[in-house]
View 1 (tube, chains in turn purple, red):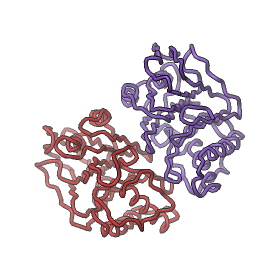
View 2: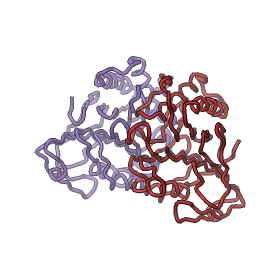
View 3: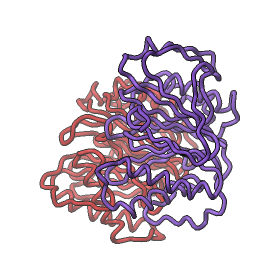
View 4: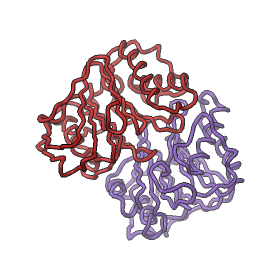
Length: 254
Length: 254
């Protein structure tokens, strides 16, 4: 299994605090030592840092932790491989272009009997069930919407419907984003919360780190965080139900 | 205009030395301050570091310079923007998946009258002439080869033919790779060399740095480097002719 982390915000926000907690699970407080990755959206573009090295030792992870890249949509993943060996092409998140938009995806779980997933348009580069499922999802979306719908929310709701088909094949916890919307789909393990004014303190579970969001934010900021397991021990995390999805648009659950 | 840097090698090789020279041109010894990027192939996967900040000041560039990522195929670009504003989505290199392979591209130059380039399959995310030309190239390749040819060299030769059409629209210097082949196409400004045993010393033009490749290599290593302008002042760089292309496979010109 793996750990997922997502963020959706109404103003460009750095994810250093949450990412610091996640990183520790990459070989330190958690066993997820088979690589990690993180994708930041900035404007219409996105950039991904990834490394097949354990995140708790990775030089690149150290940079990402120390260098506050501000983004309204972030997806991150640390891997404990099951299907597909440890290598760069099997390291999440995965990104593909659809209608001139960058779509980014990360998966936690494991699928069986997925040989009937035969994407044509998008093809996996590595050999994980995760990337295959992503290509299949995009193929289905492209088939249904040859042109970009004016309202992207319908695309994410359709993706959640498709995710239910994948859930029938095993464990499928997923984060999916186009840089404006962030979709979280749960099979068995996904939590989220929204931070807004009045902001307070939060304490990481996995690292000795406290942040006072009052000092880091303005009163209008709205930031939602999604994670496999709660990252802090003094905030109210919502546990998602099997088959439930939550769609965020720039910080707010919609 | 911009500066291009490419590498093709028969063993995973770091590009720290050449990249150090290139970086200085990003706002220091050269005016190319509108962002930079570099893509490394490792196995079937690739990873890209990019930053809309000038490379001579970029924290991420410092990491890439100091952290030797070993790769057999690398493409890098520093940008002095002409078409398209300075932002992440306009920052090279660009990567798209084709037949389950990551294809990476960077362009130096400027095109005019490119409104007849109307890619359908791949669509630009940003608004540079460069990314539009890349999408058009891939569309044409996909049209001609719906399935991956067993010999990828034919694909790159076809890409060089397509590049000639783009050259008719202005200045089109290009690097294109699938991680095994590296294609360099020249309109007006591209140089290359191949380093092989017996290795010697090389001195960077743009930074106070000398390397003795004898100490860094084994006798079987073959490494070709392609750059807009020569990076060293004591090696024999080949100047490419207008309309000429050079195709490298794992270090060797083929």
